[in-house]
Image 1 (cartoon, rainbow, N blue to C red):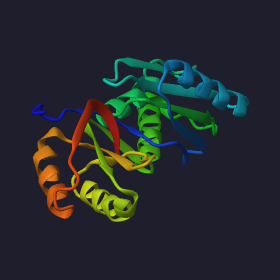
Image 2: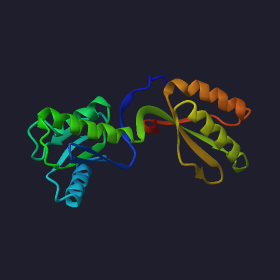
Image 3: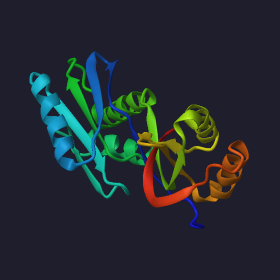
Length: 218
């Protein structure tokens, strides 16, 4: 395969939270990896239920492989001071499949429109600074089959090679032989094929399976 690799918006792993205090107002930010708008809505409902006594639970979400579904809510804050600034942080960081909710407990000091924009943006930015990023790339997936006796050393070789070439290692399959699946950028196919042949004295080869968008830890 000779197609050049394509990059897609990244995402985050799991769920995280962060709190900041600005002029006595508490801003509690929560983020979660989601893959559908329905999952995002469930997360938003969960946060609103947990922090039911807060004045505002503002939201922003981006969903889809190419970030095609985007939505935000000011939840009672002045229009354009919360949801859109939060969403803009997600856009600027080129992220998708992510929902963030910022809960505000009012501290008695008015922040003004500009202050609110900065507070909600800062809250999401600091939250994402803690996130484990997961990049998405269009990769070729190959299968490599070997005997059980050789599986350990070949797996070690493959994992090491992939770690240095931004690839992904799939779950091994054990039958009468051991099969490994690896996903790499198409441009690395010839290099891996040659390295594998040299390492196994020609006993192992790459068998192309498919081309898919694969999550790769950043």
